[in-house]
Picture 1 (cartoon, rainbow, N blue to C red):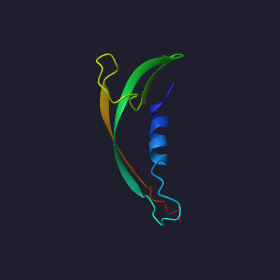
Picture 2 (tube, helix red, strand yellow):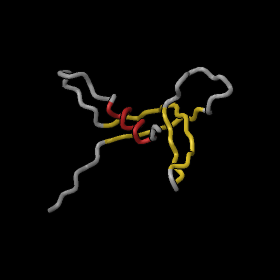
Picture 3 (cartoon, rainbow, N blue to C red):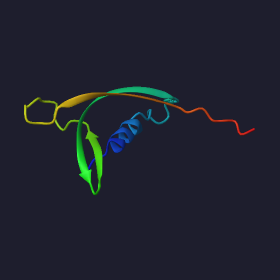
Amino acid sequence: MIRLADTLVALVESLEPPAGSGLAVSAATIDVPLEGWVVEHGTRVVFVASVPHTRWKSGFLPPVQPAHVEIGEALEEDDG
């Protein structure tokens, strides 16, 4: 089972700039198509999602929905 969190973590990890480039990613906006399902996992109901396994519309695959994700650095809180 692919969890939405696993998909988002993989997307964020893919934003790493090339080694030695001197670039740093401090924020990103990602628009990505997702296929999602609601499934039973033991006694819980869980939403799972992943990127579509094909870009072609076939009529029998799950509908694809756009996801808009904004990611940025968190400011550190001053303990003093």
